[in-house]
Image (tube, rainbow, N blue to C red):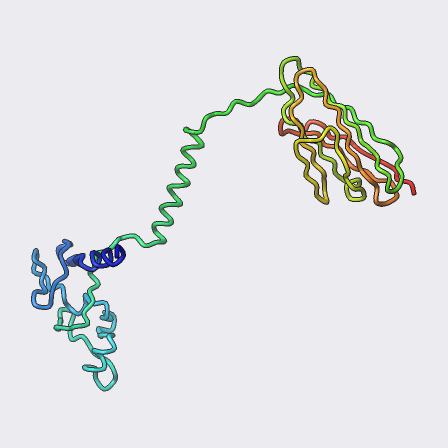
Length: 251
C-alpha cells in the first residue's frame, strides 16, 4: 500500500522545463499553451523535442515518420522555429537532478580522500611511541638429531630494564628446518601459534621488568641431512634478534 501511494505521489509531481531563452524554470507547457510565461518563447518547438535530429533537421519518431514521412522514409523539420501539435512530443528541456551517478561517485570519492587527509594531518591523535625495555637473548640448539626423533631449541630471554616491560614477544623460526621438520610443541604454551610452509610463529606476552622467558620449541625431523635456518625474535613489533640455526639429522 505504501509503495502504491509513493508511486502516486511521484506521478503527480509536475514536470518542469527550463526555458532556453530566459533560462527560467517553468511547468511543462501544454499543447494549447506552449509559450514561456516569462519571455514568450515557444517551448514546444520541434527542435526542443528529444526525437528531433538537429543536425539533419529530421524527426526520428518511428510513428511520426511512418505517418508523415516522405518516399525516402524521412520526416524533415521545415525550419528551426517550426512546431507541430504532436502527441509524441518529449521535451529536452526537462529539469531533473543535475548530477549523474558517475558524478556523485566521483564527488564521494573526493570527499572521502579529503576527509582522510584532514583526519591524518589534524584530527588523528598523535600516538606516543611506547617505550620498551631492552632484552637479552641466548639460543641453544642441538648439533645432532635423529630421524623422526624430536629435538628442542631453547631460547632464554631476559628483560634487562628495571621498570619497562619488553613489549609483545614473537619467536619466528624459518628456513630449511621448517621445510624438513614438523613443528610439534612449544613450552610454555604461547598465546597463539601460526604455521606455514615458510615459518612458524609463537606469540608470547611481554616480559616484565627484570624477568625471564625461557621457551623450548620442538621439531621432529622428516628427512636426514644438515638443515639450516634462522630464529628471528620480535620485540614490541620490531625485529630485535636474528640468530642462525643448524642441526645435523642422522638416520
